[in-house]
Image (cartoon, rainbow, N blue to C red):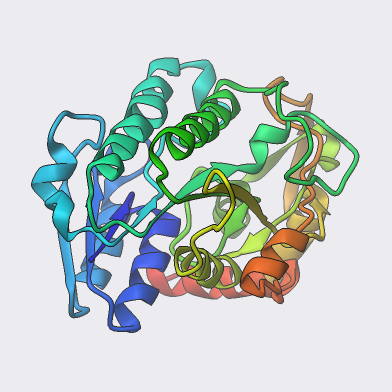
Length: 321
């Protein structure tokens, strides 16, 4: 049995669906919080509910005993821990959301794993944000990560350190995946590709921070989700048994490039206004994926233009545009 936390989230939905389609039983948990519209999360769950082998529990993973009630420890063979409070800007106004979801939640997962006798591997979500504000690249897993630009990034790096400690003390096999700007169908409305698509279709003005020159290593979900499952199936043999691995497209694009892709996919011209860069936004992200290729055969294939086109088709179909 595979436990997937954050199963109603964007990445959690896609990973759960692929596991179920491969005939693997999944217990999904999620708090269905209101960071963005819970109706979208419920729509993802409705799609998963039609697949054999799926069970869902609405819980807060940071609550004592919640994970154990969802799935007894002796039944868990693998964990994909994706539940977290996302978003760098939100951390400026709601810092304690990150304390509970990211720090307390991760520690609860580690304690659950520590006492799960049949557990083979814990895979958890980290973030490219841990690399801080850099304009060089590519970013390698061996680079120093001690200057986070946001509280969100600080909590994600803290989770990596907690996992390293539990691997050393208790031998729990763990892999931390540093995600680089995942996007695609059934994605997150708070992210730029979604909001840009929505505003362009409605004829509204886009606000581009930093003159649209900020660069991101946009990684399409159909490239990322299979790599997460490949990671789950390849526990680290390292000593201690904990490794962090980048999952990115390794081909950064600017926000202006993203706007151009949205314009092409919608056949419309965007209205734009420019604003100064937010203090918590980093200049660029750029993944070195040598480690992911070596361990999982990871080869991202979907370009930004193609990925945005697929998202726009999904968006129009989902909302009947």
